[in-house]
Structures are given as C-alpha cells and as structure tokens.
Image 1 (cartoon, rainbow, N blue to C red):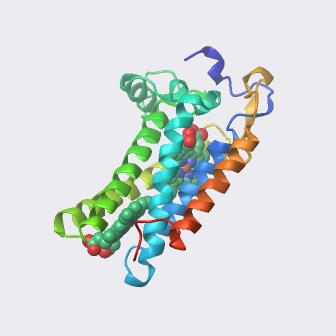
Image 2: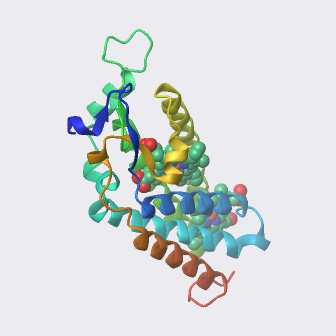
Amino acid sequence: MSAADTLPEQAALEAQKIWDLPTRVFHWLLVLCFAGAWLTAESERTQLLHLTLGYCAGALVLWRVMWGVVGSRYALFGDFVRSPAAALRYLQAYLPGSTLEAPRRYLGHNPAGGWAVLGLLGLMAAAVASGWWAYQSGAPDTAGEAHEVLSHALLLLIVLHVLAVVATGFKHRENLVRAMWTGRKRALPEQGIRSPHVLTGLLLFAAVTWLGWALYAGRLPGLTA
Ligand code: HEM
Ligand code: HEM
C-alpha cells in the first residue's frame, strides 16, 4: 500500500472519482439479485425468478473477478487484498484501549474490507453453485441443505458488511454508501481514477439485464421451472 492511498482526515479535499461505473453497477445489481433471489426462494410459483436472479448474481461475480484484474485502480485486487495480518491489525486498532495507531481512512477498500469483499464474492459463487447443484439433482437433501446453509452464511456476512460500512462511515464522518452510488470521495486530484469507464458500466448493465430477460423468457437452455 502506498501512502497516497490513505489520507489525513482534516485535509481540505475535493470530491474525486474513486469507484468506476462498472464497479457501482456491479454492486447495486448484485444487491438487487441477492435480495430478489432471497425473496423468491420459498415459493414454487417464483422459482423461475429465483433461478434467473441467482444466475445473474453468478454472472456478476464472474465479471467482478475479471474486473479485479483489468479494472481501474481501486477496483483491482492488487489495490485491496492485503495480508491477513494487516487486516487483523486494522481491526485491532478499533478495540477500546488499543495501543495501535487509530485506523486510517482508505480511499479504496480498507484491509479488513478487502477480505470481506473476497468473502462476499466467494460465498455468492458458492451459493449459486450449490443452487445449481440442487436444481440439477431435483434438490435431494444434501444439495438443498448445502444451498440453504451457504445462502444463510452469505446473508450473515452481508449483515456484517453493512454494519461495517456504517461504522467506518461514522468513524471517518463520510457517507460511504453515497460514495458507492456516485463514485466520489474526498481526495487529492491525483488520487482520482483517470476514467470512470462509463461505456463498460453501461455495457455491463445491458448484458446482465439481457441475461436476466433471456433466462426468464426461456430464450436460453437450462431453465424450465
Ligand atoms: C446483497 C447485499 C450486498 C452484497 C452482496 C454486497 C457486496 C459488496 C461487495 C462485493 C463490495 C465490493 C465492491 C467492489 O469492489 O466491487 C461491496 C462494497 C460496498 N458495499 Fe456492499 N453489498 C451488499 C449490500 C450493501 C448495502 C445494503 C449497502 C449499503 C448500506 C452496501 C454498501 C457498500 C459500500 C459503501 C461498499 C464500499 C465499501 C468501501 O468503501 O470499502 N452494500 N459490497
Ligand atoms: C444469490 C443466489 C441465491 C440465493 C441467495 C439463494 C437462496 C436460496 C434459499 C434461502 C433457499 C431455501 C428456500 C427454503 O427455505 O426452502 C433456496 C432454495 C433453492 N434454490 Fe436458491 N439461491 C440462490 C441461487 C440459486 C441458483 C443459481 C439456483 C439454481 C440454478 C437455485 C436453486 C434453488 C433450488 C432448486 C432451491 C430449492 C432447494 C430445496 O428444495 O431444498 N438457487 N435458495
């Protein structure tokens, strides 16, 4: 991590683009897909929607892995995946009475948040894969149970994720949710990303919307709920 990735809180800074459009489109579509898949999980009547939203979530995860390698600065795995020791040190600094330096503000994901991102992506992929397994096998016990356990574990991590986002925002007096919507955070001009990748973001939105429609309307093989 370079010193330029963190900032003194009191510095007079202007809003700069930090999250590119594809990362934001990815995030909010994933939220919609997860919420939709969760709400449609129980009823036979909504099964096709459940499968469709689940597959879209899977496609988003695949895309995000690729964008973590070729995307813009703060979207890169290389920017936010740090050692487990760094993540623990970051969390320890939050403990009351800790002698460690107060947790710093990060422009991209902080060291603990970076692991949460990997966990969210990994569990989302596992929920989708186990759902596919349950669907293919007609949901005999093991596959159905694995899918249910993984989906609940994912929900738990999401709750922790949202709590952590709110807590970090309070700590640094910064609205992180708005930043994930607008892409902007207070930073030095040279810390902003060079391009917001608007075209790629729009293409991602169009591709996932098309996939959802094609699956739901039966234009693709594999879903016959
Ligand atoms: C289905 C539920 C959710 C999932 C699966 C999820 C997943 C993720 C993932 C994978 C990232 C990393 C983004 C990236 O680098 O591509 C992220 C970041 C973020 N999420 Fe969520 N999220 C969920 C719900 C929410 C909700 C409800 C909020 C708002 C309260 C939220 C606020 C944020 C924020 C602010 C960040 C950026 C964190 C930072 O500044 O380091 N997320 N989320
Ligand atoms: C975001 C991804 C997903 C989430 C959060 C999710 C969540 C859930 C949950 C919570 C249940 C249990 C419902 C109950 O109480 O009975 C369930 C059931 C099921 N899901 Fe998913 N699911 C996802 C993706 C998928 C995918 C991609 C497929 C198939 C391709 C799928 C197929 C199924 C099937 C077949 C069942 C019924 C299992 C059984 O009867 O035991 N799910 N899902």
